[in-house]
Amino acid sequence: MPLLYTFHFYLFGLIAVASAITFVTRKSPVAAALWLVNTMFCLAALYVLLDAQFIGVIQVLVYAGAIMVVFLFVVMLLNLGAGQEASDFRKAGVRIAAGFAGLLLLAMLLGVSRDRLPTVFPEMDVPVNAVQPVAASLFRENLLAFEVTSVLLLAAIVGAVALAKRSTVRT
Image (tube, rainbow, N blue to C red):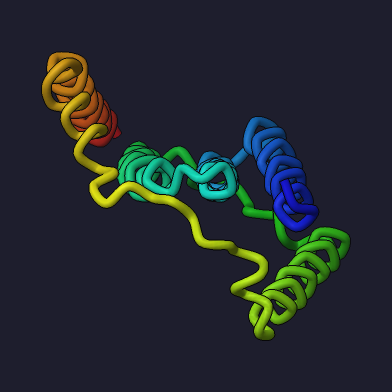
């Protein structure tokens, strides 16, 4: 693996682990959810670096997109984040680290984009129809598991709405 790939693999892996630890240690559920989204994006970047672009895109669309929207919807619906101060980014050290990370990523982007793109990312042999085997497996062999998962997510949303409705009626 070239040095650039190795560096980015370890960089995204370190950010994913740090974000996961921060996710677990947050008191505010909304801040925890945002750290989990950051972890999901880092995992998607790792999938792309491992030449699994389809899985990386699905990671962003399904987990960082749909599941986290449902999670935040339930958190907001249950009003779990009320009365808590979102102080994750108010500390000076966190701001300095975020600024440094942003400048580092900008410098890497500018370095990669300077006519070095063809040498950094060589031509890859990607099958013409890479989605068909995944879709066939998902909708033929694993159709029952796929449908059970969607029913469980629907039941979780209905349960959250019922709990929220019951708590607002009592107050």
